Image: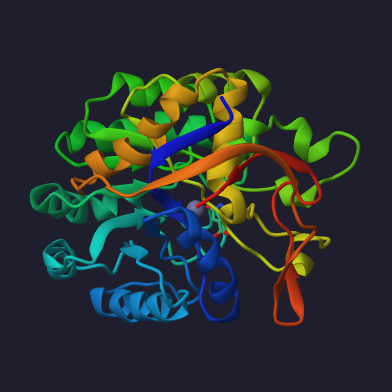
Length: 344
Ligand code: DOR
Ligand code: ZN
C-alpha cells in the first residue's frame, strides 16, 4: 500500500505555548489535525475559564488564515481551584478537561498539586459535572528513581483516585510503562490513556547510548524496551482506551542543548507521519484510524471528524531546525528520514 486515507485525526495532548513559539508550532498541528487538547502549563498557568478563553483567542489568531482548527482548552488544577470554577468550566463549550500535575513533576508544574487528598472535593465535583481529569502520572519524591516514577504513582495515588471516583473520566496522559498499560486495561471504560510517538519509537537507549541526546529527553522519561513493546501492543490493539496524544512540547534549541536541558520532544511538525511509520512497521496500519481519529473523540463525547487526510509512502528528510524569529526549535528526528508524507 503506498497511500493511506484517514478521517482527519485529533491530538489529545498538545503543548503550543504562547507568543512567538505558538506562531511557529500551531501551523504544524493545524495542518494535520482538526482539534487538539491544549495543555495549560503556560508560565503563569491557565487557571480560570476566563484565562483559557483569552488563551484560546491567542491560538485562533496565530492560526493560518484558512484554518478551521479547533483548540480544545483545559484548566490547570491547583489547590486553589474552586468548585464554582469547575462548574463554570463544565458549562463552557470551549473547556474540555482539567489537568493535574503533581507539583514539580515536569515543565511549569510548580503550581501543581502537592496534596492529592486535598483536591478530592474538586474531583468529586468534576465527577458530578462529568468533566474529564487529565493526569500527569508521576510521583515527585526525589528519592524515587526517575524510571519508576510512573509505576509508583499508579500504586500510591492513581489506584486510590480511581477507586474513590468511579464515574470520573480520567485520561492517564502519555503512558510509558507496561504497568500503566495494564492499569488502564484493568480499569473501567471511564479510564483511558494517550500515547506519544516518542514512547512508541524509542527505548531509553535513545537518550543515553552513544552520547546524551537531549532531544529525546521528555517526562515521563522514555523507558526500557519491554515497556515500549507494551505501548506498541496497546496502541495497535484497536482497544478504544488508547488514543493519540503527541505531548509535542516545543522548547528553543538552546534550552534543550544545555547543561540542564528541559523536558519535551517537538513532534507536532510531523506527528501523524511519525505515528503512521510506527503503525506501518508494526503491520497495523488498519488500526491507525481508530487510534488517531475515532477513540479520543468518543472518549471526550465529541463528534468524530468528517473530512479526511491522505498520506503517501515517500521518503523525506526532517529539517535540522524550525525557525522562531532568530532562534530555533529542533524537531524530534531532526535530519533523519521519515517514510510517510502527508499529502493533505
Ligand atoms: O516532557 C515534557 N514536556 N513532559 C511534560 O509533561 C511537559 C512538557 C512541557 O511542557 O515541556
Ligand atoms: Zn504534556
